[in-house]
Image (cartoon, rainbow, N blue to C red):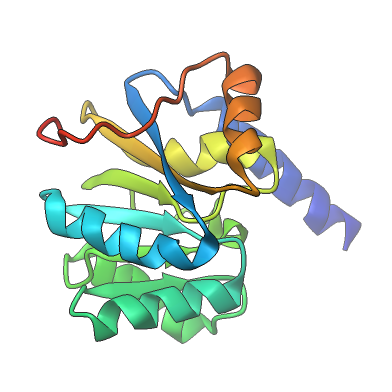
Length: 185
C-alpha cells in the first residue's frame, strides 16, 4: 500500500514538473451562490465557440450530477471520477477523445490519469476550486497545450472568493474577472 501511494506521489510530482501557467488566460466568474453555478456554466457554453472543455468538480456525486444535468439540457457531456467503474471511465474518455462528448466533467482523482485527453481542450472550468493549491496547476495545465491558447475559468462563490487571491499569491499570477466581451475565446 505504501509503495503504491509513494509511486502515485512520484507520478504527480513528475507530471507537475511538465506543466506551466505560461500562455494560460485565467479568469474568475463571481457566481455569488453555489446554486447559480449551473446556469452560469450553461450561459458560458452558449456564448463561446466550444471545441472541448474539461470541468472540474470536487466530488464524484457532483461530477455525476453535473454531467447528467448538462446532457439533459442538450450539452454532450460525460463524467470521469474515482468512483466510476473502469468500463464507464474508458467509454467516457473514448467519447471525449473522438469528439462524441464535448464536455468532460472530472474530479481530482483522475488528475494523473494519462488517458485524460489534452489535445483539443481549449477550456478548463473549475466548477469547484481545488482543495489543494497544487492541483490548480495540474487542472488548468491540461488546456492550451501543443501551441494552442488555453483558457481557465474559475467559478467562485461568496464562500470561495478568497481562494482566488490565495491562488494568485501562490502562483504569482493575476486572475481577473471574466470580461463581458468573450470574442477572444
